[in-house]
Amino acid sequence: MFQHILVLLDGSQRAEQAIVLAQKLSSQKQVRLSLLSVIDPESKDLRLSLSNVFDDLSAAIEAEEKRISAYLAQVVKKYQLIDGQCHCYIQHGSVIPTILQAIKELQSDLVIMCSHGRSERRSTHLGSVAQQLTRQTPVPLLVLKNGEAIPSSAYPDQRRPLHAIEIAVALDGTADSEQAILPAAQLVSAIAAPSKATVHLVHVIPSEHESIEEGLQLIKQTPEYNQACRYVHELERRLQAEAGASLNIMTTSSVFPARDIPAALTYFAEQRYGKIAGGSDMLAMYSRGRPSRDRSTYGRTTEITMNSTDRPILII
Image (cartoon, rainbow, N blue to C red; front, side, top):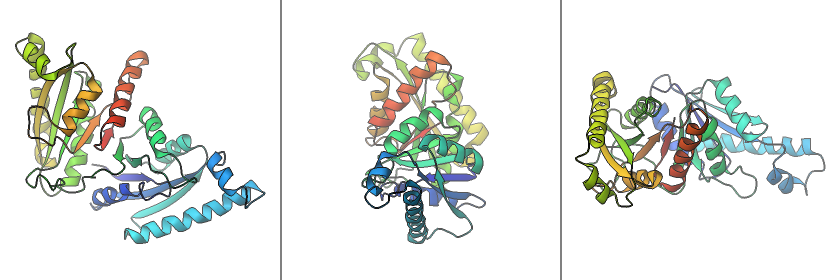
């Protein structure tokens, strides 16, 4: 399970949406919560917004730090965060390197942020930050989508009161992609606790057919499809045997062909082809560790999916 959760804040209410979910995850024993805001001295927004007030950049940065410090204190009070369990940090430097250094120094094992968070001109564009972090983060990154529902309970969808929280894990048949399974299971288990959650393994087979239905009818009797089904069923069995009881999860799976994999994953998560309408509550994908050209291709798939779906996405 996760032991130290880091929430990235830029001063906007949208970015604060991450705190509600982080609270749920950190409510377990011995789970620490940290809030991080970054002041970039080279930020054009910072320079423009403060240039009419301060002649000296160091004075402007000092004033900005006081403002952010007061803001973080308000956040702690607003969300009734537990003193001693939650710590606030203000770091100076370029945004991405500073975040990566904070992850290392604080020994965080999960980062949560809301994409496209923005507070007028002073804030960091968290949408672009999320894209850059997907390529560099050494730990799981959970990106929430601004304005969309954030699952923070065992039954998060009011339209489906009997629907237990579910995370869909995207697989491509490689051992690399399988590394997303356990963190995804741990995340959804912690959100649902003490109730049961579902981990749904999704294997998308590349296809030349535009229509999922047409492609599925043509591929169903092929050795490739049967092999893919055996593959996900074996992963289901293994996950259930190794962590089903300890994490209190159910496992299910799907295999289907698609020409546009990011679009298919988005459609699956939000609509669920061949299942009850409504899909999964969250997505999980692996993006790190791919060498050269393969990493670039897989990284683009993850980024495109992250930008197109309205579901929270866990990037490993």
